[in-house]
Amino acid sequence: MPATQPANQAQAPAEDLPIQPHELKGLADSAMDWIVSNGVQIAIAVAAGCAIYLVLTLVKRSLARLRARGGAPIDFTTLIGRTAARTTHFFMTMVAARLVVGYADPPALVFKTITFLFTVATVWQGALWAREFILGLIERRASHEGDRSEALVNAMGLIRVLVTFALFAIAAIMMLDNLGVNVTGLVAGLGIGGIAIGLAAQGIFSDLFAALSIIFDRPFRQGDTIQYDQTTATVEHIGLKSTRLRSVDGEAKVISNANLLQKEITNYRDISRRRYAMPIGVIYQTPPEKAERIPEILREAVEGCGAEFQRAGFRGFGPSSLDFDVFFIANGHDADAAIALRHKVGIAILKRFIAEGLEFAYPTQTSFTAAPDGRMIYPFPCPEAEGKGV
Image (cartoon, rainbow, N blue to C red; front, side, top):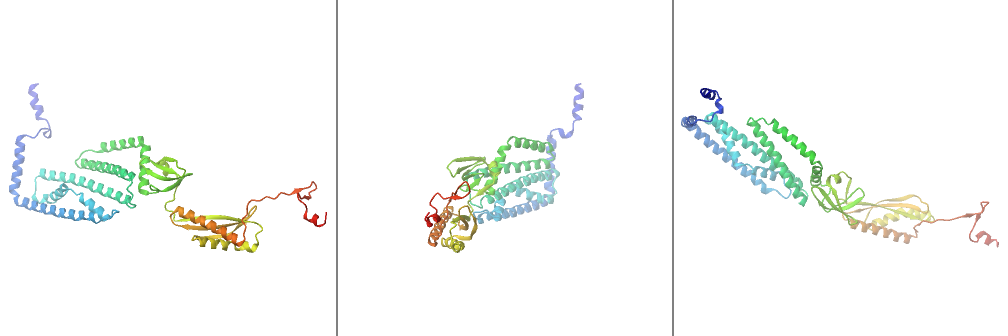
């Protein structure tokens, strides 16, 4: 049995054995022979590589200067400068080495090493560029309105973590795949793990993405007055999980972001034209000549107050009045000013009607009393009977 052990060891694959000292000496001798026999080509390749590195450095600095030219909303020039500034020296060195390595006729080991390092540098640099560009686009979208609320700061921190994790996970898988590693099982495992986490935290992620939608799509902002369902309230805080509001009656209301976005929301912040309808009723005893002039009287009253007259006219015969409608518009974003203008228009109409001798109607009811045979019985002395001396 002991005599068979050397034979078994001799049959082991050569790649499983550690590198022997004589092999290291052989590699060193081969490298020295390559340097001696290709000295001129190596010197030219090194000089060309340094020149390429310097050119890449100058390009990086030129593009990086574009960062200082941007304004408050990030433009694409600033975004390109920010992305170029993330270029690493390791990437530029490996690009230069990969471009010139073929001119020196290097040994296979040197060529494979440079190719491997170039692949790693390219994938890593691509992830850095993509991360900076995506985050820049998100910041550009978020800075259009100049809103730097607490929710936006928290959202940007969370987005930065998610983007970084996703991009560098993809970069790591690409590097392993280029190295010949079978990444099928790793990708499948990450996919299954992501599905499990998504199902377990479905409600949290739903509110989170709803918060991101509110922050970046801006259906409303902090301080806006909105209406959803039958509730009118002012937005006090937009969080990553819920939104806090203060109703017009003073109650504090908290609603999840996902639930809030599922409702029809009316935002009163951007209202610049408010249309008011004012119904008016006059008594049936109004002479037709005066009733015919009512639309023109209403127009003069509305325009005299500075409101935009839309239309006015007869609407119908009411139970105890002749009904008219007047429609006018209050321009401007200030809701208090619009309400004050509506009040002013109402008082102006009242004054004009008094001056014109027009009486407003109010609900009235007349009762008639009849005898068993159907004759009308007056509860007061009959005028005709008094005339005849009855």
